[in-house]
Image 1: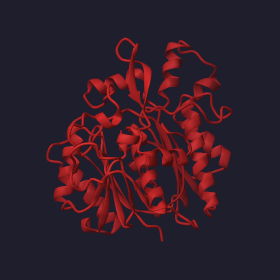
Image 2 (image 1 turned 180 degrees about the vertical axis):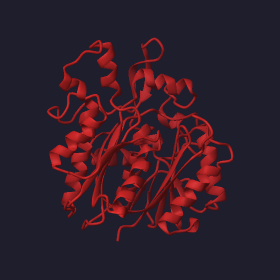
Image 3 (image 1 turned 90 degrees about the horizontal axis):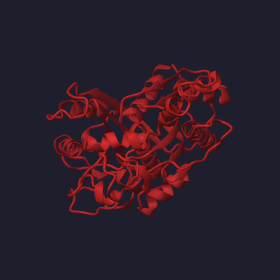
Image 4 (image 1 turned 120 degrees about the horizontal axis):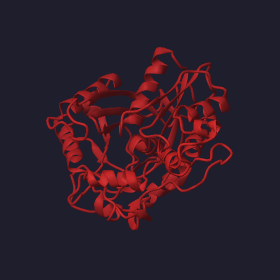
Length: 381
Protein backbone atom coordinates (compact mmCIF):
# COMPACT_ATOMS: atom_id res chain seq x y z
CA UNK A 1 0.00 0.00 0.00
CA UNK A 2 1.30 3.45 -0.86
CA UNK A 3 0.47 7.03 0.07
CA UNK A 4 -0.92 8.36 -3.20
CA UNK A 5 -2.11 11.78 -2.07
CA UNK A 6 -1.88 14.12 0.94
CA UNK A 7 -4.07 16.94 2.19
CA UNK A 8 -3.45 18.98 5.33
CA UNK A 9 -5.03 21.68 7.47
CA UNK A 10 -2.83 22.64 10.44
CA UNK A 11 -1.87 25.51 12.68
CA UNK A 12 0.36 26.65 9.81
CA UNK A 13 -2.69 27.16 7.59
CA UNK A 14 -4.82 25.44 4.95
CA UNK A 15 -2.98 23.10 2.61
CA UNK A 16 -0.05 20.69 2.73
CA UNK A 17 2.32 23.31 1.32
CA UNK A 18 1.52 25.58 4.30
CA UNK A 19 2.50 22.68 6.58
CA UNK A 20 5.72 22.09 4.64
CA UNK A 21 6.69 25.77 4.63
CA UNK A 22 6.09 25.90 8.37
CA UNK A 23 8.30 22.89 9.01
CA UNK A 24 11.05 24.28 6.79
CA UNK A 25 10.94 27.60 8.67
CA UNK A 26 11.79 25.82 11.95
CA UNK A 27 9.28 28.15 13.63
CA UNK A 28 6.44 26.71 15.74
CA UNK A 29 2.88 27.04 14.48
CA UNK A 30 1.61 28.12 17.90
CA UNK A 31 0.68 31.69 18.65
CA UNK A 32 -0.27 33.43 21.90
CA UNK A 33 -4.06 33.26 22.13
CA UNK A 34 -6.35 35.00 24.62
CA UNK A 35 -9.30 33.52 26.51
CA UNK A 36 -7.48 30.68 28.26
CA UNK A 37 -6.83 30.02 31.95
CA UNK A 38 -9.28 29.49 34.80
CA UNK A 39 -10.74 33.01 34.55
CA UNK A 40 -10.75 33.11 30.75
CA UNK A 41 -8.61 36.25 30.71
CA UNK A 42 -5.21 34.61 30.35
CA UNK A 43 -3.12 33.93 27.27
CA UNK A 44 -1.89 30.55 26.09
CA UNK A 45 0.48 29.21 23.47
CA UNK A 46 -1.65 27.00 21.20
CA UNK A 47 -1.53 26.09 17.49
CA UNK A 48 -5.08 26.67 16.28
CA UNK A 49 -6.30 26.04 12.74
CA UNK A 50 -7.24 29.46 11.32
CA UNK A 51 -10.68 30.04 9.86
CA UNK A 52 -11.02 29.01 6.24
CA UNK A 53 -12.37 26.35 3.93
CA UNK A 54 -15.57 26.03 1.95
CA UNK A 55 -18.44 27.51 3.98
CA UNK A 56 -20.90 25.89 1.58
CA UNK A 57 -19.80 22.52 2.94
CA UNK A 58 -20.28 23.27 6.62
CA UNK A 59 -20.87 26.12 9.04
CA UNK A 60 -18.41 24.35 11.33
CA UNK A 61 -14.65 24.94 11.11
CA UNK A 62 -14.26 21.26 12.02
CA UNK A 63 -16.48 20.09 9.17
CA UNK A 64 -14.70 22.34 6.68
CA UNK A 65 -11.27 21.11 7.81
CA UNK A 66 -12.31 17.47 7.38
CA UNK A 67 -13.65 18.13 3.92
CA UNK A 68 -10.86 20.36 2.63
CA UNK A 69 -8.07 18.03 3.76
CA UNK A 70 -9.79 15.12 2.00
CA UNK A 71 -10.46 17.16 -1.14
CA UNK A 72 -6.82 18.19 -1.32
CA UNK A 73 -5.60 14.62 -0.85
CA UNK A 74 -7.92 13.29 -3.57
CA UNK A 75 -6.93 16.05 -6.01
CA UNK A 76 -3.26 15.45 -5.22
CA UNK A 77 -3.58 11.70 -5.80
CA UNK A 78 -5.44 12.28 -9.06
CA UNK A 79 -2.65 14.57 -10.28
CA UNK A 80 -0.20 11.77 -9.45
CA UNK A 81 -1.99 9.28 -11.66
CA UNK A 82 -4.41 7.68 -9.18
CA UNK A 83 -7.74 6.50 -10.50
CA UNK A 84 -10.28 5.32 -7.99
CA UNK A 85 -10.83 1.58 -7.90
CA UNK A 86 -14.22 -0.09 -7.88
CA UNK A 87 -14.46 0.06 -4.09
CA UNK A 88 -13.15 3.12 -2.24
CA UNK A 89 -13.49 3.11 1.55
CA UNK A 90 -13.16 5.94 4.04
CA UNK A 91 -11.72 5.94 7.55
CA UNK A 92 -11.99 8.99 9.81
CA UNK A 93 -9.71 9.03 12.86
CA UNK A 94 -11.16 11.12 15.68
CA UNK A 95 -11.15 11.40 19.46
CA UNK A 96 -13.69 14.01 20.57
CA UNK A 97 -15.25 15.13 17.30
CA UNK A 98 -16.63 18.63 16.74
CA UNK A 99 -16.23 19.90 20.32
CA UNK A 100 -16.86 23.57 19.50
CA UNK A 101 -20.14 22.74 17.77
CA UNK A 102 -21.24 20.51 20.67
CA UNK A 103 -20.37 23.25 23.16
CA UNK A 104 -22.46 25.77 21.23
CA UNK A 105 -25.30 23.27 20.91
CA UNK A 106 -25.67 23.14 24.69
CA UNK A 107 -24.48 26.58 25.85
CA UNK A 108 -25.66 28.82 23.01
CA UNK A 109 -28.62 26.96 21.52
CA UNK A 110 -29.87 25.36 24.75
CA UNK A 111 -29.89 21.93 23.18
CA UNK A 112 -32.37 22.93 20.48
CA UNK A 113 -31.61 23.03 16.75
CA UNK A 114 -33.27 22.25 13.48
CA UNK A 115 -32.81 18.55 12.64
CA UNK A 116 -30.49 19.36 9.71
CA UNK A 117 -28.23 21.49 11.93
CA UNK A 118 -28.28 18.89 14.70
CA UNK A 119 -27.09 16.20 12.28
CA UNK A 120 -23.87 18.18 11.67
CA UNK A 121 -22.85 17.26 15.22
CA UNK A 122 -22.74 13.52 14.54
CA UNK A 123 -19.34 11.96 13.69
CA UNK A 124 -21.00 10.08 10.82
CA UNK A 125 -22.00 13.27 9.00
CA UNK A 126 -18.58 14.41 7.62
CA UNK A 127 -18.02 10.83 6.43
CA UNK A 128 -21.40 10.78 4.69
CA UNK A 129 -20.87 14.17 3.03
CA UNK A 130 -17.51 13.08 1.62
CA UNK A 131 -18.82 9.75 0.34
CA UNK A 132 -21.71 11.56 -1.38
CA UNK A 133 -19.48 14.16 -3.04
CA UNK A 134 -17.25 11.55 -4.67
CA UNK A 135 -19.73 8.72 -5.09
CA UNK A 136 -17.62 6.30 -3.08
CA UNK A 137 -19.50 3.16 -2.00
CA UNK A 138 -16.88 1.25 -0.03
CA UNK A 139 -16.87 0.70 3.74
CA UNK A 140 -16.78 3.78 5.95
CA UNK A 141 -16.31 4.26 9.66
CA UNK A 142 -14.76 6.35 12.42
CA UNK A 143 -11.67 5.11 14.29
CA UNK A 144 -10.77 6.23 17.81
CA UNK A 145 -7.69 5.23 19.81
CA UNK A 146 -6.75 8.45 21.65
CA UNK A 147 -3.55 10.07 20.33
CA UNK A 148 -2.77 6.86 18.44
CA UNK A 149 -5.90 7.20 16.29
CA UNK A 150 -4.28 8.26 13.01
CA UNK A 151 -1.75 5.43 13.08
CA UNK A 152 -4.54 2.98 13.88
CA UNK A 153 -6.59 4.27 10.94
CA UNK A 154 -3.65 3.72 8.57
CA UNK A 155 -3.15 0.19 9.86
CA UNK A 156 -6.89 -0.47 9.44
CA UNK A 157 -6.68 0.83 5.88
CA UNK A 158 -3.85 -1.60 5.20
CA UNK A 159 -6.02 -4.45 6.52
CA UNK A 160 -8.92 -3.40 4.30
CA UNK A 161 -6.78 -3.26 1.17
CA UNK A 162 -4.91 -6.49 1.93
CA UNK A 163 -8.17 -8.38 2.58
CA UNK A 164 -9.91 -7.02 -0.51
CA UNK A 165 -12.58 -5.16 1.46
CA UNK A 166 -11.52 -2.00 -0.40
CA UNK A 167 -9.39 -1.26 -3.46
CA UNK A 168 -8.42 2.18 -2.13
CA UNK A 169 -8.98 3.99 1.16
CA UNK A 170 -9.34 7.67 1.98
CA UNK A 171 -7.96 8.11 5.49
CA UNK A 172 -8.69 11.37 7.34
CA UNK A 173 -7.57 12.26 10.88
CA UNK A 174 -9.10 15.32 12.55
CA UNK A 175 -8.74 16.97 15.94
CA UNK A 176 -9.94 20.52 16.58
CA UNK A 177 -10.18 20.31 20.37
CA UNK A 178 -7.71 22.94 21.57
CA UNK A 179 -10.48 24.91 23.28
CA UNK A 180 -9.78 26.71 26.58
CA UNK A 181 -11.72 24.22 28.71
CA UNK A 182 -10.11 21.14 27.17
CA UNK A 183 -6.61 22.62 27.16
CA UNK A 184 -7.02 23.40 30.86
CA UNK A 185 -7.59 19.71 31.64
CA UNK A 186 -4.37 18.69 29.88
CA UNK A 187 -2.47 21.41 31.76
CA UNK A 188 -3.81 20.13 35.08
CA UNK A 189 -2.83 16.60 34.08
CA UNK A 190 0.75 17.89 33.82
CA UNK A 191 1.02 17.12 30.10
CA UNK A 192 0.32 20.38 28.25
CA UNK A 193 2.21 23.65 28.69
CA UNK A 194 0.60 26.99 27.80
CA UNK A 195 2.81 29.56 29.54
CA UNK A 196 5.98 29.15 27.44
CA UNK A 197 6.89 29.35 23.77
CA UNK A 198 6.88 25.85 22.26
CA UNK A 199 10.65 25.44 21.84
CA UNK A 200 11.12 26.48 25.47
CA UNK A 201 8.57 23.93 26.70
CA UNK A 202 8.47 21.04 24.24
CA UNK A 203 11.91 19.47 23.97
CA UNK A 204 11.56 15.72 23.37
CA UNK A 205 14.87 13.90 23.95
CA UNK A 206 16.37 17.13 25.35
CA UNK A 207 16.99 18.57 28.79
CA UNK A 208 14.39 20.91 30.24
CA UNK A 209 11.34 19.56 28.45
CA UNK A 210 8.07 20.17 30.32
CA UNK A 211 5.38 18.77 28.02
CA UNK A 212 3.57 19.67 24.81
CA UNK A 213 1.81 22.60 23.18
CA UNK A 214 -1.79 21.81 22.25
CA UNK A 215 -2.64 22.02 18.56
CA UNK A 216 -5.28 21.28 15.94
CA UNK A 217 -5.20 19.64 12.51
CA UNK A 218 -7.02 17.64 9.87
CA UNK A 219 -4.83 15.54 7.59
CA UNK A 220 -5.94 13.19 4.81
CA UNK A 221 -4.29 10.47 2.75
CA UNK A 222 -5.30 8.52 -0.31
CA UNK A 223 -4.00 5.00 0.17
CA UNK A 224 -3.73 2.73 -2.85
CA UNK A 225 -1.69 0.09 -4.60
CA UNK A 226 -2.17 1.82 -7.94
CA UNK A 227 -0.68 5.28 -8.49
CA UNK A 228 2.06 6.48 -10.83
CA UNK A 229 3.94 8.76 -8.40
CA UNK A 230 3.37 7.78 -4.76
CA UNK A 231 5.02 9.59 -1.88
CA UNK A 232 6.04 6.53 0.14
CA UNK A 233 5.05 2.96 0.88
CA UNK A 234 3.28 1.84 4.04
CA UNK A 235 5.16 -1.38 4.69
CA UNK A 236 3.28 -2.52 7.77
CA UNK A 237 2.11 -1.70 11.26
CA UNK A 238 1.38 -3.02 14.72
CA UNK A 239 -0.87 -2.20 17.67
CA UNK A 240 -1.12 -3.14 21.33
CA UNK A 241 -2.57 -1.89 24.61
CA UNK A 242 -0.81 -1.57 27.97
CA UNK A 243 -3.96 -2.57 29.91
CA UNK A 244 -2.46 -0.60 32.79
CA UNK A 245 -3.80 2.94 33.33
CA UNK A 246 -5.95 5.60 31.65
CA UNK A 247 -3.07 8.11 31.55
CA UNK A 248 0.22 6.61 32.69
CA UNK A 249 2.49 4.46 30.52
CA UNK A 250 3.12 0.97 31.90
CA UNK A 251 6.62 1.24 33.42
CA UNK A 252 8.17 -1.91 31.93
CA UNK A 253 7.15 -0.78 28.40
CA UNK A 254 6.49 -4.42 27.56
CA UNK A 255 3.51 -3.75 25.30
CA UNK A 256 5.25 -0.92 23.47
CA UNK A 257 7.99 -3.41 22.61
CA UNK A 258 5.34 -5.93 21.56
CA UNK A 259 3.71 -3.30 19.32
CA UNK A 260 7.01 -2.38 17.66
CA UNK A 261 7.89 -6.04 17.16
CA UNK A 262 4.56 -6.70 15.47
CA UNK A 263 5.06 -3.71 13.17
CA UNK A 264 8.53 -4.87 12.11
CA UNK A 265 7.30 -8.41 11.46
CA UNK A 266 4.33 -7.15 9.46
CA UNK A 267 6.69 -5.01 7.37
CA UNK A 268 9.04 -7.97 6.85
CA UNK A 269 12.06 -6.18 8.30
CA UNK A 270 14.26 -6.23 11.39
CA UNK A 271 15.08 -3.44 13.82
CA UNK A 272 18.49 -3.11 12.15
CA UNK A 273 16.76 -2.10 8.89
CA UNK A 274 15.20 1.05 10.38
CA UNK A 275 17.09 4.21 9.38
CA UNK A 276 14.81 6.85 10.95
CA UNK A 277 12.64 6.88 14.07
CA UNK A 278 9.77 9.39 13.77
CA UNK A 279 9.04 9.79 17.47
CA UNK A 280 5.77 10.36 19.28
CA UNK A 281 7.87 13.03 20.97
CA UNK A 282 5.42 14.77 23.32
CA UNK A 283 8.21 16.08 25.54
CA UNK A 284 6.69 14.55 28.66
CA UNK A 285 8.97 12.56 30.96
CA UNK A 286 7.08 9.27 30.63
CA UNK A 287 6.99 9.47 26.84
CA UNK A 288 10.70 10.31 26.60
CA UNK A 289 11.53 7.44 28.96
CA UNK A 290 9.46 4.95 26.97
CA UNK A 291 10.88 5.94 23.60
CA UNK A 292 14.46 6.05 24.86
CA UNK A 293 13.99 2.57 26.32
CA UNK A 294 12.64 1.28 23.00
CA UNK A 295 15.46 2.90 21.03
CA UNK A 296 18.13 1.46 23.32
CA UNK A 297 16.83 -2.06 23.84
CA UNK A 298 15.15 -2.87 20.51
CA UNK A 299 16.93 -0.60 18.04
CA UNK A 300 20.38 -0.52 19.70
CA UNK A 301 20.37 3.30 19.35
CA UNK A 302 21.00 2.97 15.61
CA UNK A 303 18.21 5.03 13.97
CA UNK A 304 18.38 8.76 13.57
CA UNK A 305 15.57 10.28 15.62
CA UNK A 306 13.32 13.25 15.00
CA UNK A 307 10.11 14.72 16.39
CA UNK A 308 8.01 17.54 14.97
CA UNK A 309 5.65 18.28 17.87
CA UNK A 310 7.92 21.17 18.98
CA UNK A 311 6.89 22.80 15.68
CA UNK A 312 3.38 21.57 14.90
CA UNK A 313 2.23 21.10 18.48
CA UNK A 314 0.40 18.01 19.68
CA UNK A 315 -2.62 17.55 17.43
CA UNK A 316 -4.05 14.76 19.61
CA UNK A 317 -6.04 12.32 17.43
CA UNK A 318 -4.52 13.83 14.26
CA UNK A 319 -0.93 13.94 15.58
CA UNK A 320 0.38 10.83 13.84
CA UNK A 321 -1.22 11.91 10.56
CA UNK A 322 0.60 15.26 10.65
CA UNK A 323 3.86 13.47 11.40
CA UNK A 324 3.39 10.82 8.69
CA UNK A 325 2.48 13.52 6.16
CA UNK A 326 5.72 15.32 7.01
CA UNK A 327 7.72 12.10 6.68
CA UNK A 328 6.05 11.13 3.39
CA UNK A 329 6.66 14.55 1.82
CA UNK A 330 10.22 14.30 3.08
CA UNK A 331 10.69 11.05 1.14
CA UNK A 332 9.80 12.81 -2.07
CA UNK A 333 11.63 16.07 -1.36
CA UNK A 334 14.81 14.54 0.07
CA UNK A 335 14.50 16.20 3.48
CA UNK A 336 13.89 15.12 7.06
CA UNK A 337 11.77 17.91 8.63
CA UNK A 338 13.21 17.65 12.13
CA UNK A 339 12.75 20.31 14.80
CA UNK A 340 15.86 22.21 15.93
CA UNK A 341 17.77 21.16 19.03
CA UNK A 342 17.69 23.87 21.70
CA UNK A 343 19.22 22.07 24.73
CA UNK A 344 21.59 19.17 25.53
CA UNK A 345 20.08 16.22 23.69
CA UNK A 346 20.11 12.50 22.94
CA UNK A 347 23.03 11.80 20.61
CA UNK A 348 20.95 10.43 17.71
CA UNK A 349 18.46 13.32 17.67
CA UNK A 350 18.54 15.25 14.39
CA UNK A 351 19.08 19.00 14.64
CA UNK A 352 16.68 20.78 12.34
CA UNK A 353 16.05 20.22 8.64
CA UNK A 354 18.41 17.48 7.45
CA UNK A 355 19.08 15.86 4.05
CA UNK A 356 17.19 12.57 3.77
CA UNK A 357 19.47 9.60 3.24
CA UNK A 358 16.77 7.13 2.22
CA UNK A 359 15.68 3.98 3.95
CA UNK A 360 12.95 2.92 6.33
CA UNK A 361 11.11 5.04 8.90
CA UNK A 362 9.36 3.72 12.01
CA UNK A 363 6.58 6.00 13.27
CA UNK A 364 5.54 5.38 16.89
CA UNK A 365 2.42 6.79 18.53
CA UNK A 366 1.36 6.40 22.15
CA UNK A 367 -2.20 7.27 23.15
CA UNK A 368 -3.67 7.78 26.60
CA UNK A 369 -5.25 4.59 27.86
CA UNK A 370 -2.29 2.52 26.72
CA UNK A 371 -3.01 2.71 22.96
CA UNK A 372 0.31 1.85 21.30
CA UNK A 373 0.84 1.83 17.53
CA UNK A 374 3.66 1.85 15.03
CA UNK A 375 3.54 2.37 11.26
CA UNK A 376 6.54 1.51 9.07
CA UNK A 377 7.21 3.62 5.98
CA UNK A 378 9.63 2.96 3.15
CA UNK A 379 10.56 4.27 -0.30
CA UNK A 380 7.84 3.87 -2.92
CA UNK A 381 8.74 1.51 -5.73
